[in-house]
Length: 221
Image (cartoon, rainbow, N blue to C red; front, side, top):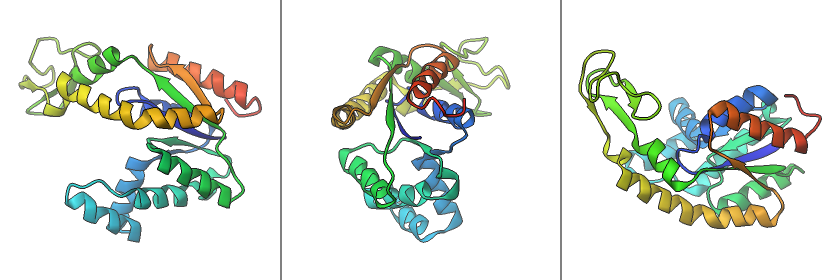
């Protein structure tokens, strides 16, 4: 099975991709991981990506797409993969279709993890970090025993600027504008399957697994 995982920041795509990788025995393809590995290994694409990253610029679609294309054709992807964080635009989606088509393959399903905006803001804006030991806490999920104080070392807890509610809302607005056309693209092709993203990671994993098993009854799970 060749599956794309779609969802806003805070939806838990990465967590679910790792669980699904273990459940179904096919790899997770994360563009973030691919970029970091290519840079670390000093590959031609990695060095190309590094020139943009060093300047604080986004790595161009062409470079990311080529990295993903290479990864999709490696031996461990012969039975399928979970694409995590890619594609994000229709242009990227077309590139994935074209690449798979060159190898007489096709995309099988798109799982969209749906979480209300209010829940996402609470998840993303509730993180606090210790200035001393960098331990992380969440006001709702993993609060410290004493407000503003690290359990581990007694250091001061602070919130990063990109974790504030205003910044989170801005990030979500960008995501919604850029991803809405992509969701329509996949829905029109009969590939999109919406999954309720409210609940524990285990509950959400079960929802996704049930959907995929209904689509691919002979897959491992």
